[in-house]
Image (cartoon, rainbow, N blue to C red; front, side, top):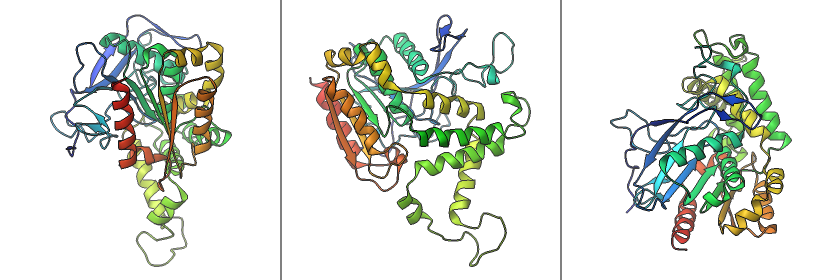
Length: 377
């Protein structure tokens, strides 16, 4: 029987990689610390480990009820836990905060050992490949040579694809949800508007605002822009329509009088309290740079992936206009052309891109079957 909540995680843990980390652009980070959480128990031969890769503004706290560690329920509470789609009674589940983030893993708000002050924009630009390289080092630290599965949605799905490209022999199976092989011009455009809203904030100070007033307005507007792309026309229409917030008629001023305006302001203000503006700049840029197809072709990863017999599941959502179904199908087509064992499912959902984060019996059934099937291969 499925429990209402995931088990309490072990608490946020930290691992500092040995030696400097060389990034894809050739720059070096002298020290990288990664924050992570785990659920379940690693079996004797370490074959039941699942890595969850979080999306753009997520973190390592994928699941776990509020309790001794003072944490709110995880961002994938409905999917990770005893008896759930990713069953922590069966699997040892790991989720780490990505490189460049602001939830415990080294990023622009971290202290630069050379200067003794936060990096700010002296932090080098990172890529999805760099994020995955740090995750692989964490798996080495945990003694896990081959993962039962790597699972992620959106930017987390990009990380899944990067795992398949760079470490195909270490991936037992892969699940990519609501993602893409590369950003479209539309996605890049939305990210650039978000970045410019931060950069244009008078408190941004070229990224060196730590210790002073942070670019709250710019970050809030950036979140509003992003949040629009996570929803759908149908979701916005059914949730808000053209309803007014606190009055029965127009005020003929520039206050947030429509419910949808009030909602966006709320989401923006809430985001400012938990996220770092510079991290959003770096992560959106990493997503824009991502293009898995050339890398797959260059290093023979597709052939290695097929030879490793790593099955893949790709899932899209009908109302996702940020990474629409045709972009997910492109991933499937690429894999099929090179003999990779790939399955595809499009799930009917009205709530847009964020559908993969919401309760879904269909996704639970898919994951339970896919992960269980691979466990018995």
